[in-house]
Image (spheres, rainbow, N blue to C red):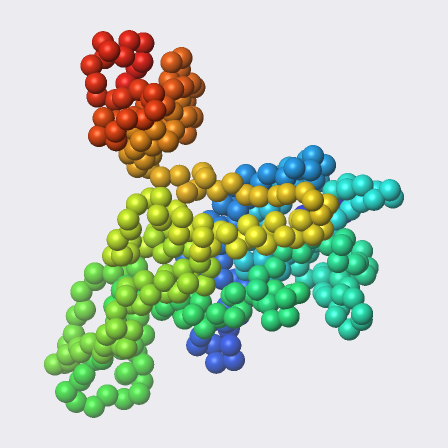
Length: 385
C-alpha cells in the first residue's frame, strides 16, 4: 500500500514495453520512455532537465518561493523541476496538482502520473480529467509542455522524430549483433563441388558454434576440400557504421537543442570560447524551458504584479582567463572598480579599491587614478585587483 501511494504521489510512469518490435521483427519500434536507453538521448534529456532544475529561480513572492523550494513532503524543488522537465522533454507533457487550503492558500505541488491525465476540450473551458482527483480546472494543474498543435497540449519530441531515433537504435542493435558474432561481417563459404542441404546446414551450425560470440573472436577458420571464404559487404559497412552513429548524435542534438559537443561527440566545428558555447546552449535550448516554467508559474501561482526569472550565469560563465581579460578591460577603462571586479570573481572587497582607475592610453578620466604611472605619485592606491 505504501509503495502504491509513493508511486501515485511521485508521478512514476510505467517502464514496461520500453522497446517494442514491429510486425516483421526487423526494426525496433521505440517508445518515448524507451528512447532513454539510447545513450545520446539519455545524455541530452538528463542534462537539460538537471540544468533547468539547478539554475536559480528568483520569485519576489515569499509564499510561492517557499513552495517552489519545498513543493511537498517527499520532494525538493530541484527534484520536482527535474522530474517534470524530463517527463515533458520525452513525453511532451508533465503535470502537478496545485493543492490549496479551503481559504485558497497554496499548500503543496504533487506530481501526477503521465498516463492518468487527459485534457478535455469539448466544453466551454478546458478541463483536466485525472484518475485520482477527478475533473480539475486549469488553475489547479501546473502543466509543463513542449510545443503542440493547439497550444494546450504538448507533442512528444520522441514521437514526432521517431524515425531518427529508431534509426539510431537500429544502428546500435546492428553493431551489437556484429559484436555478438565476433565482429565479423557476413561470410560466404564456396565449395568447388556440390553440397547437400544437410551438409550446408551442418557447416553453418559448426561455424556459428566455433566462431560466433565475443569469446570466439580471433579463432582461426580451418577449411578443407578446397573450400574458400569470401566476405559479403553490407550497406552499413560500406557507408560506415561509425559515421552513421555520429550523424545520429547530431540528430539527437537537433531534436532536443543540446549542443552536440555536450553529448560527448567531439565535433570538428570550432567554438569561439566556453562563454560562447554556454550562451548558445542557454539561448537555443534552456531559455525555452525557462520561459515555459516562468509563464506557467506566473499564470497559476503568482499575482499579476509579481516577477519571476531564472539566473543562468552559472552556465554562461566563461573560463577564468576570459573573465580576467574582460574584467581588466573594464577596470582599465574606468567602467568598473577593482572591488567590483573582485565581486565578479566571488572575492571579498579590499580597502582602497573602490575608486575607479584609468589606463594612461585611455586619456584623462575626471579625477580617476591612472594605471601605469609612478606608484610614488599615487601613494596608497594599489594598481592590481
